[in-house]
Image 1: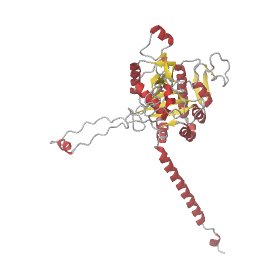
Image 2 (image 1 turned 45 degrees about the horizontal axis):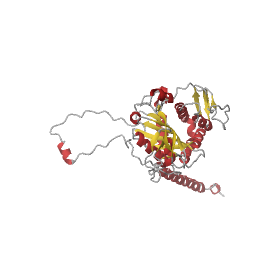
Image 3 (image 1 turned 120 degrees about the vertical axis):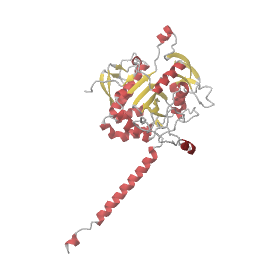
Image 4 (image 1 turned 180 degrees about the vertical axis):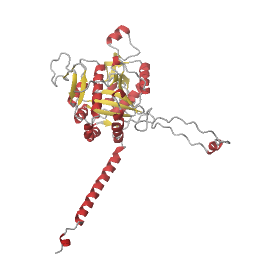
Length: 415
């Protein structure tokens, strides 16, 4: 037998390689088709509300008619055109500003289907793609508001209440809202009617998702200038069953559970301080997301958002915000704002203010059947609060440190 006859034929190996390549190509094609089908598809029900945000920054210039074009022809050579300044463009996307309603939902049963739950945190985020910058406005959950577009059989009872109730009455468990967007939809519509502030998108997560997201990114690091006591007044124990813990001054590495406990501390502090604590956690999350190692868990983060949150964003929009906008933001580019609140003593000694929220008692719709009942609320002068909102929309609000406003803290280096 000759040497050529003993040499194995390369054809079987080539056929196997061709088959493998075909399978890989088919898998990539299928993946691409599936990704393309969801990339630009909203992940939840849209709000269906008119917004003040333009769809694009450039306004098309209408084409002249034939008559106008002929009349515009010069009889003599015209001088060279004067150069005009180039119109600035957004650093990401094609719109100058986006408004996002962010909701921290709380239900004692940790309802992952968002059938019920109150809006424990309500914030409107103004994303300016021109600078870029982010302004975050906290709306207190006890704001006294009128609920619009309530189902006819509930409209007589469910008229006035607290802002955080709008989310509850709109979600599928109650389904009192006649518009689109369920709980986020009624909350957005309530903010629009009462304060004249329109949003483009929404995102709601419950505490279960919040804790899991922080655990996925490996926890966060928060620097505290002073101790933060999460024990109810009169309670000595820091056990999870009896308190939200005790956090010492200095650097604190927080797991998802720790962060949830920290942002919910309120018994010994004002709503302003509680809001400030929440802002610090947001800053810590931003810092962690800037670490390259975290991006290894990007798919887990997106999967958690896709499966267990309420949002009308598309995957593509979230991807752009995370990969284009976020890396361009410095700590000083993020500003937090809150509405000033008068104390009971201020109201007693100085009267009802016209430039602050003020505590009061009034009839609000009860959660079980909507029947009105007396409760603590925050009231306000309608003209003052709309002027405040107008400044927020224009991006001209100035931080008021005494109200907890300002950017992310300038924390010392982490050891």
